[in-house]
Length: 436
Image 1 (cartoon, rainbow, N blue to C red):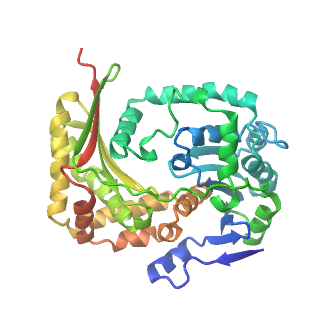
Image 2: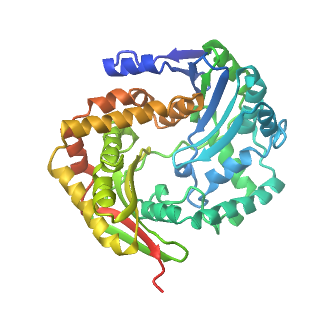
């Protein structure tokens, strides 16, 4: 038994328009599984993207990195699907299989020819639901995970990014690296991983997205036919409640040096709205484009084109369930670290003191909407969009994204800067070449 829910019934005209542009069907099965489906018959391809509320924020505090370890172990086989069986099946037809772990989720996806969908879907969901997590494979995978962690710490951009997160989220899982810590994989066990899998990879905690040349009835039939869960563990604990986060009340700084780099890095970070206030997040998307979106954007025009103090500058807002994350990053010569930070602060202050012009707002709106449009051209891009926002509980607003962007006014952006982007209270991480 299942029922269909139209998320746009009794909504405003802007969201109704989004429903026409992105006609995704949302179905909740009797066992609690959410199925999102969009029929696109133009190309004989289907993307299947499975999202699980099982990211870093769901890990037991004593075993950070567990979500990432499980991502690796999912593909090590089940009782009925051999390791690499799915990879070989997709490789023969030119398909794709991949996975990623984040702070609020883990997700796994395939892209396959429509005519081969069931042959690929059956082993794919079997691996996710019935992962064996064998001891021998678990021990072998520890070396791979340790190498992946070491590789990340060799990347100066990742080091700066992670340091800024730790400053901004000092007592929250968002401050931990998704990959885990290099010293921890030997302390984890296959039993830890099996328990985490059985605890969280349950239907009420998962969303399956299917986009492509697949009619709706067939999509539901396919899911019901192949998605069979074993009985849940007795006494399974509920998901942790949302935790409140407090913005910094001071400038929090971490300065680092490292050999082997020519350019210094600087990242400034602010706490943003959580997923429940995602409408505010869209305004921060606009602000990131206003600051660093193209040669005429404020920071690019100032720091690169006019002063020549930076080699590159970039800004971005990351929407997260419990608290977003707004960053401004620059790549520059070390002697300009202090003055570039000052210039960025001045631009943030100016945005809080006066509204931007209608012309500048319109330019940014067009860039953001165009980027959204180009980023949803392919079936796997659409599936990722639906899954990500569904797992955050904000599918409706995600579908109305272009309309929400176009509805923003200059006063709204000024208010967002005043609310979130303090020119004096923020986290900043710098990395420069060793001085000796």
